[in-house]
Length: 541
Ligand code: G1P
Ligand code: ZN
Image (cartoon, rainbow, N blue to C red; front, side, top):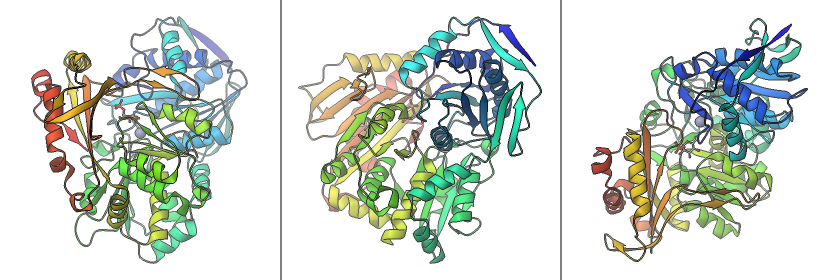
């Protein structure tokens, strides 16, 4: 079998963002583009000879083409074996599970998460380390640095591998194992949650809808919810993964998961609704006519964790990203455990989970997870909710309202301005950085803190700066601004607004109403309309 060394020249901009390298499919289709990046990964992660790699993706357009290239390059670079999910399918949390379980030399995940898929849409690739989590910044920086000087890559000349039937095959002397992408993950879920109680709840009439959004969780949700847990057929909606996600935007929020929102509205709606994103790591949770914010979801799950067998011994700590609301902090305080505040991006949770400092973690961006893997995990969050619902036998809305009554409510909203001009976005952030707000008042509220969030990892000491502008008022209310690191077109400005409301009589207001004054301040301070030309956000969550 021939291993070819192919001469190439570096591409600009192969710099992984919040979650890997994301570009338009057409960028990846340029000759040598994907190959260069894969070679940069292999050159940066240490000696790959004789090692095993996990490969899979969310099934979007270009997934299969990319996997064939990666398999041939893995062979060309001396890997002993690649484990690939059947059909090229592997959710991000399942990839993390498999990497950890089989102690592989990490894995390559092909996904652009919640971004649309298709020939003119997005594609992405990222490397996860042997612990199962996204590569830390040191590694992604090394990959980028390597990509700028790379002159050749190595690839085996071989026929494409059959990805659609389970089994072991060989590619240029390298073993390829096509495995069931659901089995190991389902087994892990069964070890954490009370499947008997959930099965009994479904048998007793608990009604649920799960919207897989034609993305990767379809097969997982169908096998676990309808198969192992006995939920009626039809519980899973949009369950067949499609290369273009059916033309939709596989992002589980109130705007994009409209089928689910509609299904959960009205007196006859099911008791529980949930959705996951393109690659299965995000989740949205709904009750009948009731939306649970991701920040509240993390707090409620933390407060109820001991109802689940896998967490019956209690939590070591909670971690949340900085822009996530401070609701989990209140639970941590009540439980007498630490709450860590990290920059945006799941990679920052890895060291805390590895060191046993935190058990649950989450982000406001529909990400929730625990130390069972090193990625956020959509279906895991849904199963944890189901376990809590099966144990408490109360409606979702009642559980959340009781939570607010006990801990207070962190009223919260995020406003996204998508696809704005990059120069305007950078100018806006520079403007915010340059203001001197401490000691002044905005809308009558004194500003107690104004900074650009910086983080020192308590485990490895690594420092990350410029992680978002915070304006914190003396009553604890906050406005946070940051630019997205996952977009592929122009810039996306995210504005996060939060206020604490201890009074149960005032907790049921619509956040857009309850936060109206802070939202106005946020727009004015940043001069959003003048600088971006946008009078309204594109998405409000
Ligand atoms: C977004 C979310 C962030 C999440 C990331 C990957 O990143 O805000 O919390 O970790 O997607 O799912 P952003 O586009 O804001 O950089
Ligand atoms: Zn995702």
